Length: 513
Image (cartoon, rainbow, N blue to C red):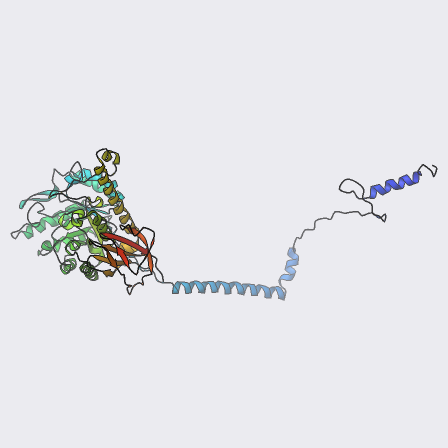
């Protein structure tokens, strides 16, 4: 070709060769260096590290450096292990010891509920009516039913006394056995009141008949305990235990406990009224009963006197044998003893938080009150607000008050069963006045509880003092309260607790080492 317009064939071949050796750019064009050289990118192969082979490891395993390294690592492992072991031992040794839990009996686990008049408690007026109410009693965390007396007897006629037969108007043996079976499935024990002359003037008759009466009682106790009854209750224990043959009665219940097939321990429960704290304490030590229920709180009304009586009784006796009530000893309802609706809740709080077993009469949970000498009819309208509201507003207000009392009772019963300080903890008086009392309940490392109650008609201020067992914190949280000025879950100063008339409060604070 000519030089003016055409390229030489040789030049075209060189251009083609250059384009093939140029690297491609992102848009597919050939990238050429200015100086005419060409960059070619060669992909690198991935290099994998396979570690040393077995033969290579064997060659170096026995060298001095590796041997020394292994010994150092082994020593460090054992030093670390021994250090952790020593630390654990130090923690265990220095940690505060847990106080052993005392052995509790079924009558210590929750409230006892007395039904002394079947006709007033149920519409049927018989034993089978109680069975229908077991679910309600279970909701209240009741652990024992005190039933009767309902054995055959005529007033002041010893010849008619038959402690082993049920009055036909009250029910049958089959009904009692059915009640016991279903109660036991719910964890509720059944106790029979075998007070002999319960319809007469004197519970134990008169005229030198003690030997015959006690022999009948001994035979009946063995009969009922063998049938599965969980305990025997008698009134006027002072008169009964003064009889020469009384020791045979506790022996009957104790001997019955040796039968390994029995599911629960048997109880002998005594009731006294009109006794001083020294007399009650003496009866506890000499009568051999498992639980003694007295009316000390009814007879002693001053704050200082009540504090002294409680301390004296607990110093001399095991709290597991002490029963507290406000009316059961004389078959009087709590609301009649309390006098005012406000005090019903206060005394429920007191009974559930004192060390020992709280004992209630049927209807005490709703504030049932007798209007005369006759036993008041139990009211079952709490779960029927629509029916009551249809009557009138006053009836509905009364129903709501009963429901509020029952909920309060249920809350206290549930709390007592869960908190060790309330269930079997120590008792310490913190302060008292003419009509008010404050005390501390504590157990080992569990939460502590301060109870303050004012049953007087005027406001009262209590100044709790620390005890040798526990220093009080500056403040505590309100757990339960009947005082509108002390709201639940709020903090209250423990330097001074002011309560309105007829009010009570339960305070809680944690254990600190």
